[in-house]
Length: 170
Image 1: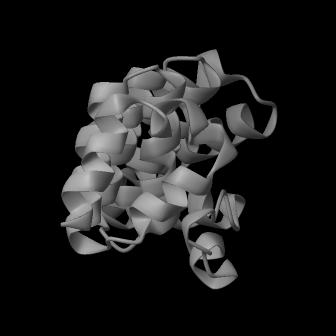
Image 2 (image 1 turned 180 degrees about the horizontal axis):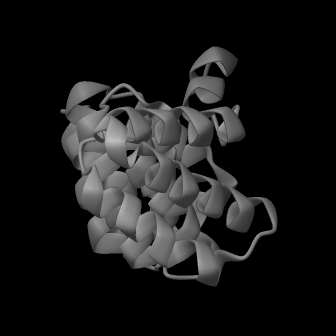
């Protein structure tokens, strides 16, 4: 089956305008706190941005954890948390953070991709296939995109994934 480039591009959106998303997420965070404490909140935002810009992921992690703790309803904060965890090689935890971001913003297909990617990097084929099955109920073409993606080749060739393809074909 030939996959349309537009659908593939839709699935493979990565980090598009990531720095703007970071800033937007952090701005939303700042807007959720009372005016009298915004100075302190802006400091935490600037601290996080500085760590990310310098790729100091170990230093950025406790800062983004605090941001997520204070304002857990902001999807891009969860996404940034996932990015930080991924950069530290903590892929299972990153998948959970990305899943939370995707739950908060279910049309963010860049985050959907990050869930798949983190589960794959964590070698969590059971979690990957469960997520693929869930997502295929909303968009059946996702299974074709996964099958065609080189980075997901190992999981796509498993008996479990092939079984999912057969179940979805019926």
